[in-house]
Structure formats: C-alpha cells, structure tokens
Figure 1 (cartoon, rainbow, N blue to C red):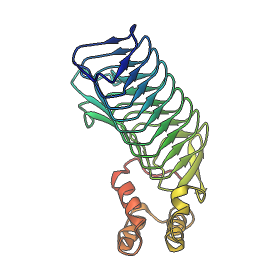
Figure 2 (tube, helix red, strand yellow):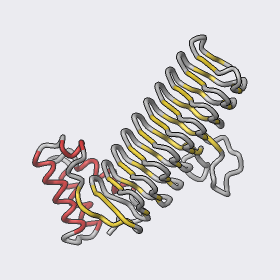
Figure 3 (tube, helix red, strand yellow):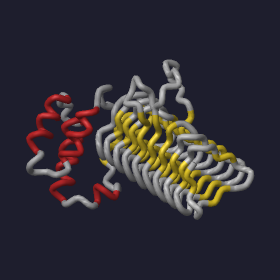
Figure 4 (cartoon, one colour):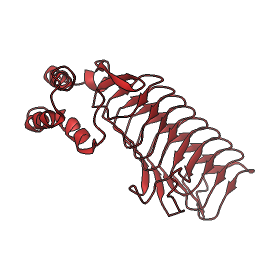
Length: 263
C-alpha cells in the first residue's frame, strides 16, 4: 500500500493493501477501495463508493456518492481476466454512476479521457473509449465497445447501442436511442435516433473559421441531402485533408465507424 501522508481517508472506509493514493486524495465515509487501484493527486471520492479491479484514476477527479468504479463488466464471456479501467484527469462522475472494466475480447481496457462530465446514474460499459470534454446526462448509458469522441454530448435518459461511434462534437437529444453511428457535429433525436442538423451552437463549431464551417455543412449535405454513399463521402474527406483541418475529425470517425451511420 502506498498512501500519501497528505491523503485523507475516512476512518470507516476500507482501503486494502496494494492501493496507491496520491497527495490530497479524499476518500469519504463507507467506501471500499480494493487492491490494484491507483488514485491520483487531488481526486475526491464521495461516500459509499466502491472502486475495484485494476483501476487507474488520474488527478483532480470528483466521484459522487454510491458510485461503482472498475466493477466486473456485464459481458457473459468475462472470466475474471486482469482487464482495466483507466480514467484521466479532471473528470466529474455523478452519484450512482457505474464504470466497468474492459474485456479480453475487446481491447482489455475501458478508457476515459480528461475533462468529461458524467451526471448522476451514468453507465459506461466495458471497452468503451471516451475522449475529452464530453457530457452525459442523468441515467444515460453506453453499452460495450462504444466510442464517444471529443466534445460529444449525450442528453438524459439516452441509450447508446454497443459498438456505436459518436463522432466529435455530435449531440444526442434527451430520451434518444442510438443504434448506429453519428458523424461529427451532427445532432440526433428519437428512438431510433435520426439526424436533425448540424450543431451550429457547439463551441468547437463556433471556433472554426467560416470556410471550415462551410465544409462541415457541405459534408452534412453530402450525407443527408444529396444522399451520397459513404464511400463517396470518405473519398471527399480524404481529398480535403490538405485544405480543411477539420476533415481529419471526419477521417477518424469513418476509420472507426462499422455499424453504418444514422439516416
């Protein structure tokens, strides 16, 4: 066990041998932190939370009460292999959220980036890859193997099907069910979710220069108004990489997309 003398652990919490706690970590009352867990400097863990498995948590995260972090995943093939959950820095994880470790059938690791905000009751399934600066509303869930790219937003009471890809800065409206991939900057709503336009109010979109914004609109038109094939759009994106920096975001999306896009 390696616990910084500057860490604070409530007297009625259980911290097993082998746990690493950085400076200024705070573990609230009635928590259980299992062997193999590493928690970085400044992270706060709310009361009644359980953190187990080979879980690594970075700096300055906030974990709400009754959270379950690094728990055994819900894949029936899982046989207690030494898989992982890795969480970056400055994430806000809400009350009663559940984040599961990966599987060997996937990549072996559930990976969470930095500066994400997960509200109460959020579920992130095994082998998910969450980028940076994302938002998930209350009681929404990602099934296994989902990719949630940088800046993507998921409303409350949403369900994202396994293996779906939500592109950078995509936005899913409240109470939606997503069963196919959503391209970058596209807004979607419904069950099953369908496209409703470009999110022109996204901070990342507003930060683009006008010609880059026009390119985003052009790709949306190609996908949803001109009804071109995905292969034709991929060719257009590849041809635009040298002229439009934002095209790289779409190239990354298409490289991972395998379920087809929402229509």
